[in-house]
Image (tube, rainbow, N blue to C red; front, side, top):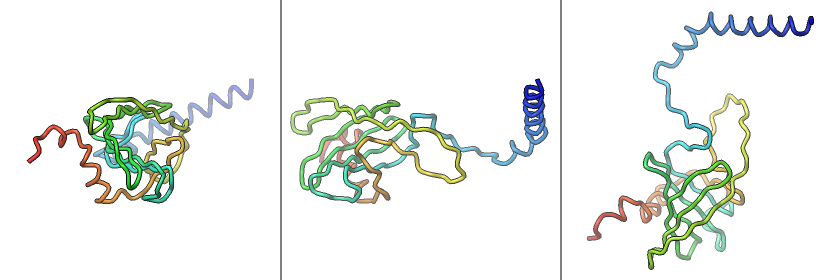
Length: 161
């Protein structure tokens, strides 16, 4: 009974602190930034590889961009061909719909994701896809972004000159 009473007092104490400090907390950031929901990534460029270093022969790499209209990118191996894809992010995998550039055939591929747990932290970190067998490669360079333009859906729709 004493334990239950002290727990209730503690909860009411926390609520009172939140209510009384609510105005100060609310005024800290007048222009809050949109934060991604669990399972989503913020817009931007991402580079992942089976190898931790760039351009390792035999390793597979993913270059992708997250935009308001969706996720698209390319999967490639150095000194080899590549396939463009659109992707859908699921809690347990990244689903790729790949397009063969020469035949326009389409096929699917899924890359499993590691289950992530949220941990409280004061540091800001870039969200990760947490792809099984793939490592983030930072930073995404201008050369990476130019390479990714080969698979930009908007570019594919424009006539070549």
